[in-house]
Length: 261
Image (cartoon, rainbow, N blue to C red; front, side, top):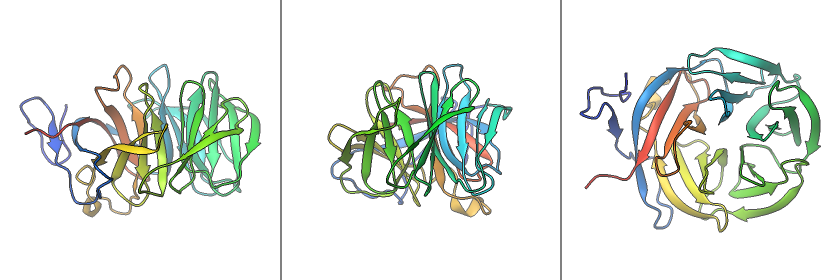
């Protein structure tokens, strides 16, 4: 059944969540509304740090916290597979699939773990200088966030830095999703804001306020929004994504739409 968290029964089977008050203005970047199409169960014990859609439709999930960090695949019913746990001295962060490789960041340990994308078994490691937050894959590079306003580009084989861009008017860029049109969508930590970014010049091209998606009053100890992945089969113009957060018990299948009127 398709419904919004706050209401069901809209004429088209989905209900728009109007932009709230948590998202600030980013230059002249237009706002987008959020429409919820489906609600899926999510592991409320998962401190979600990374989310990506695999070619087979499963979701690659990276979780955090020392002693609890994992990487695994899950389907929309919550069935997990290929689970791998990190050692207790590593705090897992963003994840990305590039070809036959899956990369997993760590927070303060300056270590990226290279994995076999099929089994998620570790095959190598690489070092980096900053903290590790979000990660996504473009055609010929990885895009990484580190909690600042910088997006860093990295070689998908070696994880070597190949460039960077400063994103206008923001910092604390967190979990990332790269889309086929070359844009990067970023969760902004400690907010319910998602930004669409042009990584070529750092310009914010759209702003999404998801404050009505999972209201703070209903979170009961859950943490912030952190998890965005493209819905399989959707095009960049559809703007269809999966969204969830740290310790959330639901994942939302949504569309970002231009406001009506």
